[in-house]
Length: 115
Length: 111
Image (cartoon, rainbow over all chains, first blue to last red):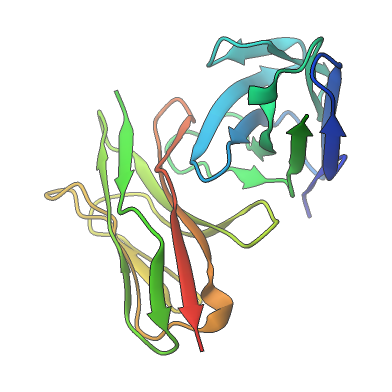
């Protein structure tokens, strides 16, 4: 069966510090991968998605970036965190190549607090 | 563009009460529709889905029917439990495999 892991589970970082959040998927190959952010009391915002190694699409301009160095690894980074980067970051995957009914499966999330 | 609108919460109910959380959408084409649930401190879990008009998705006593004529996908449960307390997200999936989420509705069930 497929599983998706995110780490760390929680993170407290000072403003201006770098960030690296990791997401890995097991039990599937060539998945579509996604990063979402959920700000406090708000809905989910799609940040990045990837359809393959080295292929990243950005939905929202910001000081965050994403990379996909391996097929089942998706990394969210920042060189300098802002207070507004605080939130709950969710990684998700879906089966590549299926349209329409293709559901996304979410990881447990990383709660980031920028002080 | 695509959008999903949910009723604002929080929704507070007593145990065994009937639940309805409204969801309407705007989309081009024929999207698939989903309800996700987020329990406190956790990620999102798929609750149910429907892929075409008049389909009914159901799981754990929850139901939602894809109504193309009213562009709605309202979530219902006949008798809620304290363990149903969570945030519920309505979402649509377009042909490009992009999910568009509603703002979420927090449900609080009191014993």
